[in-house]
Length: 163
Length: 113
Image 1 (cartoon, rainbow over the protein chains, first blue to last red):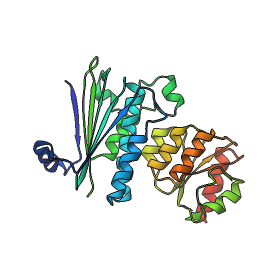
Image 2: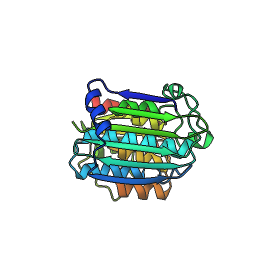
Image 3: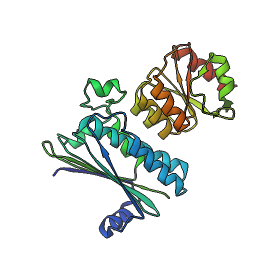
């Protein structure tokens, strides 16, 4: 399946070790996201932000996590047939995985271009669909990985380090 | 840095979220946009967001991005459900009769002093 990787310079080694070792998270939570549900979209991101806040993660990191998670959550509500978010919290990072039920991306590189959007009228009326979702996720994360193929599903995972 | 309550006076702003305490809320800057992703990508903590969008997602974005308050220009009023949500999240919503351009101009002048 075609994939896209972004790792912020300086985080390669740390990220490779983390993904290879697959450690057990301290806290793991799952959230369902339904197609076109813009009322509840945002709840998962809010919960994740709150959990990290309770753990004493600093405000600037909270903001980055919340924005990346919210954009990803909205992507599932706006463009897919629904999906699931899993947020794994570790002492030094958060690893968020999002799996949708399709229909998949035709061209991942194109979707990463600011301004490119396939959003319909409903999504635009909600204030989304500016083609900034994936670029905003990249801007706020240390690691971003997409696996997707048109006609199949999309998997997105992000990592944000607390230090 | 200015106080939100001083800014409210200048724009004839009405606080819609009566449960949110804004007596000490400070504003360090402003942001004008009617696109949620643009706000999430570019607005900064402590800014006041001036917009004419008024659906529920506005509250989610303001809360996630740690914005100081949301000002609805041209007397735009969100539905009660939006106000309720903002009260729960502690996000201050304000309605002003002035258009966006004037609201931004007034804030700019106040911050420049």
